[in-house]
Image (cartoon, rainbow, N blue to C red; front, side):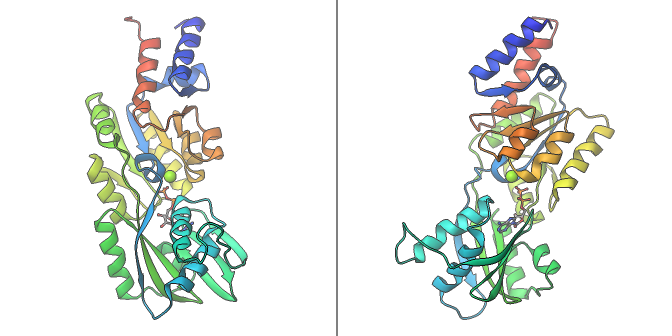
Length: 298
Ligand code: ADP
Ligand code: MG
């Protein structure tokens, strides 16, 4: 393609909300034969909502949510936002909720958060975070987690002062187009896989719903990038589609990194192509545009 054709292609992309950062990305996109999708915020809306709360010991739900919200208000994770939003229901003043002070806040990327609230150590996150913190997970909590996962929900564990106290079930609906996009990609001979930090159960049920059969769950950011490199070593030209900080290494490693426009700045910076309208269909728009610009048959 001539430089003019590339400029035209990039311009058409921009007018359709597909921001292509360079000629190289536009050129590589039509060679892609494998796409790695992040789950949360990419295949799903990324606007999760709390659907149920189960306490494992007696405690006032309002107090429970004050502690959890105080810790999660410091996190940018979509799951944290869902928890804080839900916690507002228990406040006296829903609009101007002031949470208790959180000290020593720490975000453990891909796992959860911890903080000291009202002199108690609050840990909120997944199973591996609890295990890392030496917190035992009772059978009842395991069962609640499994139940949530079967329904494609994410179960979040809450520990207070080293004791597992609650399980919050959160549902993040699929993007309406996700299933169609995966099926169109299949017809284009492009293999799709899911790589997520979420647990196996939830990841598998989401993958099943969209029609993807290769799933890598419980992946840390570096492991997402490792998977991309592994696929490249197998000879695939790989695109990565993601929205989070945790996707950045994989976005950089991929032949073409595509960030969801609503994603975090770090992901957008790491990507070669930004899908400004947050539409999953635009993964196909980008590939089509590349095909039209670079195929010799016009
Ligand atoms: P994904 O790859 O699906 O976007 P992440 O890697 O961001 O997921 O997170 C993986 C898992 O870690 C989440 O499914 C959740 O269980 C847990 N987690 C991460 N951050 C938080 C948080 N702020 N609060 C609660 N749980 C969290
Ligand atoms: Mg994500």
